[in-house]
View 1 (spheres, rainbow, N blue to C red):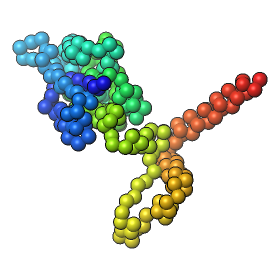
View 2: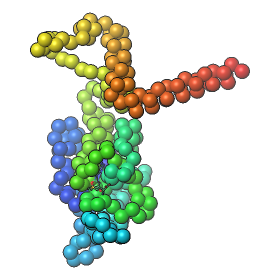
View 3: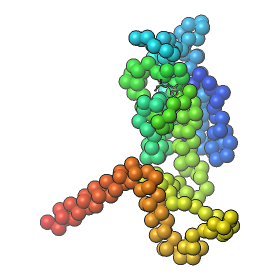
Length: 251
Ligand code: SAM
């Protein structure tokens, strides 16, 4: 099955951009995913091809018009035509922060329609009117949604079947189990007086796995207390759920 991506943008030339090379580029050539870059201006109603207007209530900047966006989204939905509904995502700093779990869900679906904002962003009415999911790629402000869309697509594409070399390289990575990944090393064994941890050269797979698990937990606790708290919360919850289930079975 081909994963289908449509991107609505004022800058279609930005696509496929970095997704035209390496893993994603090869996967596209092999038909594992497809891309349609849709020019938002094509859906303007006037001869000046206007897509934006001044903010209601005043203030600086311009806002993308809901009517123009709606026509572009309706067109994208029509050309993508699939038996399963294709999610429509708008890149916005106010959106729900993108997670690896959401990326995995999207990658398992038929594809995505991604809408890129510019200027001050979108007329708020478009989100409810077209069931648009707002997605943020972090607490930063970009000048446009295109780099955010490229990130989102890159994250999805690498998870598509047959895109990554070793199947395990997807599941052991940071965030996949709610933790950051353990640190990596490679040859030379000694470099600028720094050595590779002895255990990684021991050949003892059980010890290596235990070391990696510990590193992953320690790093997550130190670097991302927010992730660690969530991970611990989920662990405690699933342990008490299992205890409850066992009690129910025993009774
Ligand atoms: N006025 C907006 C605000 O303060 O939230 C910022 C608009 S920004 C200059 C223009 C566009 O860049 C946004 O509409 C959005 O599409 C994109 N963008 C900027 N930062 C983003 C982020 N962190 N995640 C996703 N998209 C972002």
